[in-house]
Length: 148
Image (cartoon, rainbow, N blue to C red):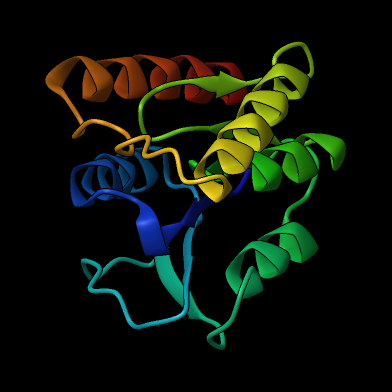
């Protein structure tokens, strides 16, 4: 299993959890972004910088991910593409995307896009909480334990 982060929008606290996990488990972690991101020196961690543009990083992740890989993303269409390739997707808030819940998540996302396009202000997601970080770490631990 390789680990991937859709890094442009991933909170720093979640990246740091992933850095520790990749080093502890000796698993390859790749952060994909359209700008340089500072990472600790490690043979297990690398940054893949892609060109700027809509969905460029997402498309590169989909192209490179293999069945069983884990992708950290809050991008629901990306999560759907990862699941379709046999990968796993986990949000920085600790929500595990599955075949059972991805359809509903895509519908909600599309509905919210429609509402925003019609002028309704949704305010965006709340800041990452301690509970979110714990949910993320708990799901990550379970996934990594199954991969060993």
